[in-house]
Length: 299
Image (cartoon, rainbow, N blue to C red; front, side, top):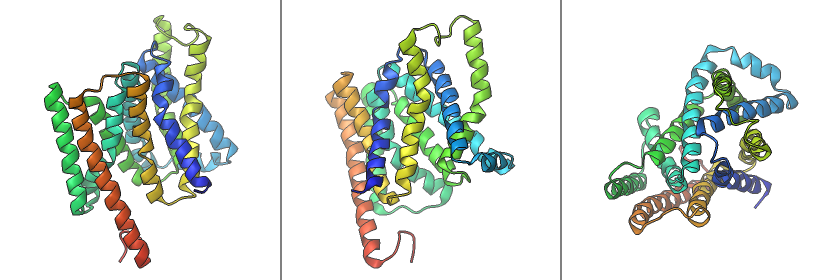
């Protein structure tokens, strides 16, 4: 493995261990955690923009209506995703968050079919059907949809779809998204402070440091991911992405001791089989094109 692989493992590993960090803030309302994550992330990202001398190009890009038309809905989706994830972790649903990120690649494929007119190969259809059966089984067993998993999966898949047409790079894009959210979030933070419900500055030094650390914790794996993407093929990134839900699942079951019944195991197994088939099929397709000297989609 080269340096790029280690960068990817670092990024995905940190994302996979995120539940531990947010769990330390379980006494803070999820909406306040989200607010601090957005504020401190924006400040960290703005500093990185300045240090990388991208400030002028960033400001120029912001003024284009097409850019804002892409990033306003992206900011909305990232808000839904971050808020749902933090709420789920702090309320003891880490295992269900992992399910969301396990099924996310399959939903991304479906969105590609509906919005980008992509065609699915037979094995991809089999994977999607198996995952759907897994979700259906979990729903019938528990009497309700696993809504946390579905919200996380749909919001992240839709976010990824928008980013396919996004004109900015990862650093500038997330800076703009958090910048769009900065004003309403700051207004909310002022409101809770005036109402005497604000935690920052009132919950102790450790809590304050953890809330402030939400910015660096968010930007560090982003930087590692960007560095990895420049150094290794996207197919490798695709395989390594499953580190995230795997670690989340292990954290939920082994560290936080969340309930994981046999009935729930059956639903997860169906999703895992779907992903194994998807990854295996993707690997075989990639190898076949390598032998032909082509890339998938060419020829």
